[in-house]
Image (cartoon, rainbow, N blue to C red; front, side, top):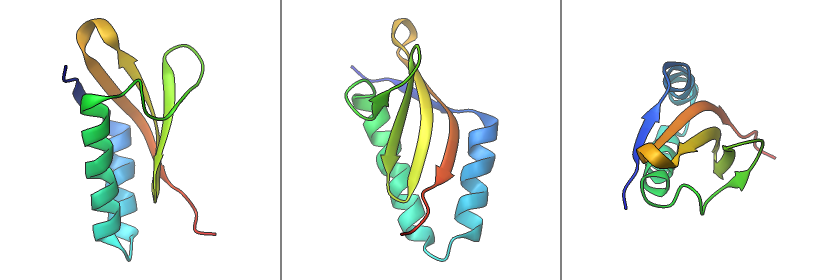
Length: 86
């Protein structure tokens, strides 16, 4: 089954800031698209569980917090940040 993925406004703004300031915009776009695809199809099988229904997922160069609302088939992304280069 497919889930609907919703990016909360604060997460959308953070992603836009990350993309705007990136010198590798295509890499950021590719990671965001891969995240959307994973969360649409297998949100409970990717990432790691945290408190309650909160999960964390990393698709370099991005990491994010999201939660899954199984009854509604909804995934809400509520925080995203760029993983620092090592």
